Length: 254
Image (cartoon, rainbow, N blue to C red):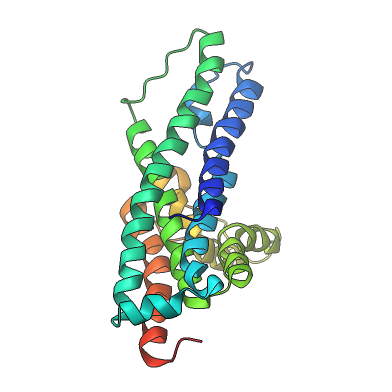
């Protein structure tokens, strides 16, 4: 975690969380029935880029600098190097996620204060939402690490994780056109397929972690709940990590 770029990614993530949440809260504070905690996840869309970049930079770091040769000579069991990176990234990403969530909470306070509205973090679904945000951001960092360790090149790894997490869900949502044959509760087969795929993407898993299943579940998609969302996100990190370990064991490092 000594790369300077990882610290910049972390600072950018916290700043994005606070700034975007603050802007969203100020913009909606004048609405009747304004609820400050409704803006708590407003900055999550861009905040998630920081953990992804962080994970990719660590996963590709030894390969991009050429330091992997000396590392693997010192540690012949190569999978132990990846395991150590997982522990380091998980710990750092957890602190980053907590800092980003704290920044979001602080960002809604001015808007809430201007309306004399209380911010109760221990009531209702708010604790679930806060914990889900922390787990989601931490999981994304591990996903980025696993893809980086597998691909070993910064740009392709970044394109992969950002494409799967941010771009593909938008493309899929645009691909669903209104109309067509309805079959289950007014949902077309195409909508069911697309919504199912989106639920099984990293961002869909994050939505299940952060919000209640009833609030997030898309029409026609499986209702996985928070636990299911966590398992989906863990799978996205675990599969490329196992592939990276196998690549290290079965092929020479070049």
